Image: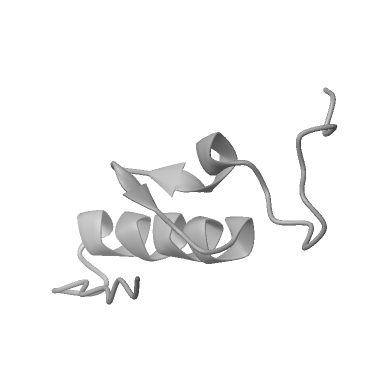
Length: 54
């Protein structure tokens, strides 16, 4: 996989930072959201809120 389209701040491409139609600031943030989403679906946590900053 080529990462030639990365810019100088080394941010992952938009496609790699998107989950459930939400574009996250980083890939790590997106992965953490996915973990929490699974916990919510399994009933471990009840409500998952997220804050999107522009």
